[in-house]
Length: 146
Image 1 (cartoon, rainbow, N blue to C red):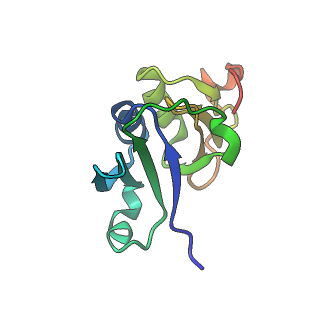
Image 2: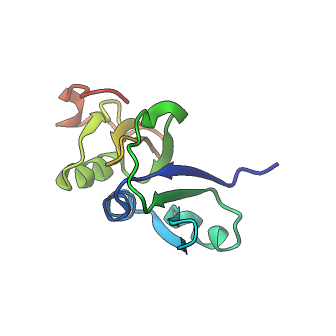
Image 3: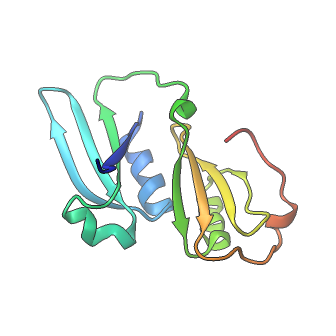
């Protein structure tokens, strides 16, 4: 058995791609438009997984966009997606500058949680050891749920 991907239904494909690619830094590796089924699948990988993803040997995120509008609720019913990042403070700053709310700031220099436009909880973990606590992160309060 091998882990393949996590599927996330999205209400607005362009907003989702902006969040996951421009915000988090994931890369699109495949797109499938299915007119008969009236859906689009977009497969994303982390930059360090690019070569393995081409061979389908890296975990992927599958964004599923159904062309007919649906109301998706309970985005946390599957848990969350988790990504390791080179600099958690830089990643969180970049996301905040894009208008993303940091639900659980990286006060410990190790872990943060943000939400996608569709309410999916995303965990960010610092690569290697934790960074030293730094402002403004060490004084920020939690916002909402993750």
